[in-house]
Length: 67
Image 1 (cartoon, one colour):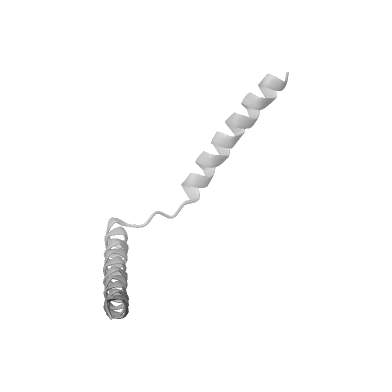
Image 2: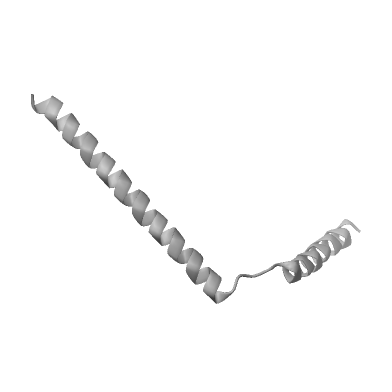
């Protein structure tokens, strides 16, 4: 009897999931492309900022180590 209850719960889960997926508002292809551009630009800017900070700290550290 517990086995049928588990199957019933699993089936209910999948039915509920399917119903919720119908409510999802999916972005358009244009929106996805635009958001992807924003993310890539942000990653590039943050990467450059971290690279410059690493370069600056490395230069300062080498100045004190070599002295």
